Image (tube, rainbow, N blue to C red):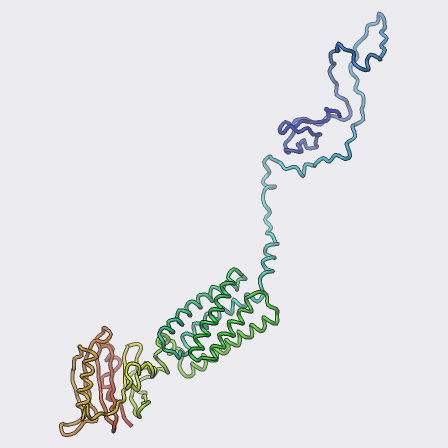
Length: 438
């Protein structure tokens, strides 16, 4: 092997053959040595003659020429054939050698083209029915709020009503969050959506079943199961169609219910009393009359905005109450009670009025009587006896007007009361005297 055809790298010390770009195959840096010519043998300086005869020289015969000066000839370059490269040796090219030098900016800059593999993989994991489920949840958020405001509530239990309100607010918030997430094709909240639908199905379905609202219970289960089919996994076309049909049918039943309810009672009125489960019916206005349930009579309403309280709520306070009308905006009340006439307690309406006055003072210790009146004479029993006064009720000053009527063996008692500031706007003065027994 001829050492003149090899180069030692000044950086890492690797001995390698010359490269076209003068780069070291190990470290990739430039080598200082240049590639020697393959057409000439470089001249080598004469070595000093050793004291021991060199092999091969002793056998060589040299005949000197006498008296002829010998001139030293300059070395002559003899063409030598290039050393053939070894076929089995693998020489790495420069393209596979990492460079430690500073790389130009155009070579170091990352490509600006997006990687197509991750989006394609993510898109393959998203069901085509997931955005449809997101739209359904957004629509359900609106319908869920309408259900609480407009659909009639049979139960008057405050704890159950509070649970319905809390569930409504949480359900609406979750439906909006999940709806927008699924509409954008995000799958991170799928587990939360599954929990919301299952819990909502049993919570609201159970409440509706407890209140004997069987159709609404079926609507809740159909909606929850249909939406679960659309958002969970990758349903087939047939299964997705079944789920979507169940959802559309449940929403159709709700819309029909809203329409029928609005025909009986305006939705605006129902929304006004949504947080008052003790009320029922439609709003009644000035000039309209209410009729008795236990006894035939009519009582004309003095102003607009009156609602009837549910019978079970009214009679829980006093079993003799027949009708209790209330004005939610001004906290006014018109109450009609029907009692059996007891001669042992009172022989006339005047005595019955005194008994009612004592009862008012027991109920309101600070009750102050303003005046009394009747339409009779000292020699004739009146057909109506009235008293007015004031007292503090629920921490506010109230005005009261009470009128008593006698029909055969029944005593009809009409009581009108409202906050002092609202008594005149509600036109309650003389309202208890408009009752007409039949």
